[in-house]
Image 1 (tube, rainbow, N blue to C red):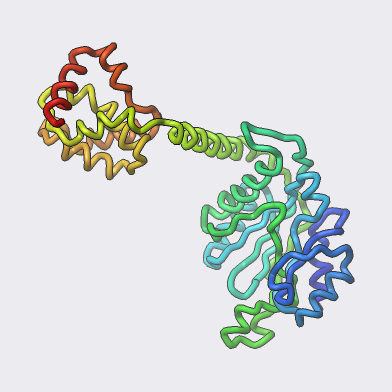
Image 2: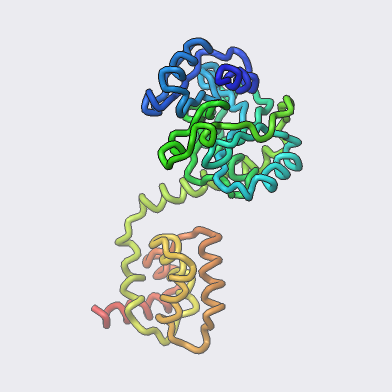
Length: 319
């Protein structure tokens, strides 16, 4: 029965099938490289067919960077129908669905060429393949998958039908109750996903932008903006409108406050009926969107001497 289940899973993979890794309870879920079905079966037998998995991506896919399967760990069974509809509407896919006992495993083979040598920004082909596997898992489940799951070419393993889940055995379930079962079979079609590539590239660009922002912020000397921190302890009668740009960017983009936290602090600091909470929230949202940093005090001195005079006077008083 397990031998048939293994054959069934192997039919979802492209040749060469071997070598690839497997894991079992006997290996303490550590991956072990095997070179044939017979070798894999020996490990499964040694583990009494408990917690038997096989890598979705073999050595060939890992070395040539071919992310030719979408794998989804779906703990929320109620989200299955929505997920299958998304597969059908989005990529015309009809994936394999396994009941693993504590959730569902979904496997969709796709048509994919090697990403070896591919780059985008500072991401190489392997990093991009990892981002693709993680993005498609979330995109095709409307973010209802297990968000703690981070699939990659090297760590994605699927349970073999006919084997048993130790987590169910440990809570008193019988072997038949803990068996990995097929819910829906794959239709044998490897859909193209080129048409969703623009959305994936947009996702990658957001990640690159965020990484760049974090990198830039880490290089900023916070001492350059201590004048804003001191100013937030003072009450201003003039210049508040002109300083909202700097204060909002400081709280949002330097101190990494949320829009709610920043707007509360600014509203309290301004303490004026001329600045509504909704107006301040709007200013903070602009700051979050444009990701700009506050001006240096020297820049204000050169471009707005009057405002610089107000700031200098207040800082001198507070000191």
